[in-house]
Image (tube, rainbow, N blue to C red; front, side):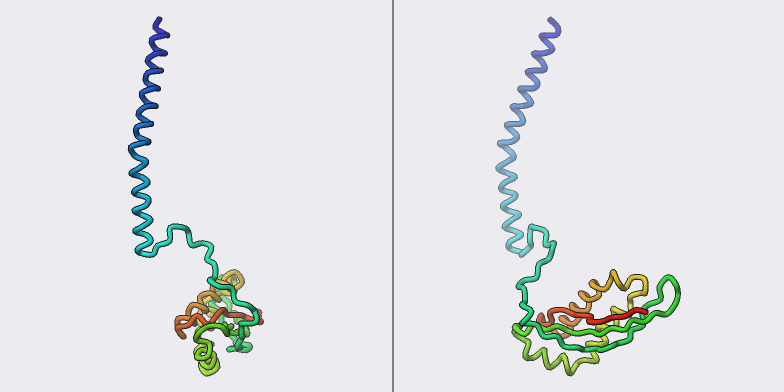
Length: 171
């Protein structure tokens, strides 16, 4: 007799719990959907992306025929920062700036690349000089990206497409 009453009480509690869950579902879901649309509208107004921007994709792929490489430093010798061994190390690099010939401001930027060679060399040498003998290989791509962003900011253009290190040697 006691077992039957206990089973009935458990069944009643389960039915009450199920009923309350159903009520909560129908009460809170419309509010959650309204809140979701409100957040989406606010994000659209202030131009925030809801999805992760990673991995970053370049806007438009540039054809190889639309690129022009300008050598700005041939066999530049750059002193690297001292590493764990405490010795002085040097890097010899040939650097070139790659321009997008289809960019709007290509005609104005291209002559600047030849007239501002010394400034470009300095922009390239500074981040490379911060590298050490121990970490130059794994940091090379990050430094190239940093140099590219600095050059694009310096010349206020997106015509500069990338930086290439044709040959480099770290003895």
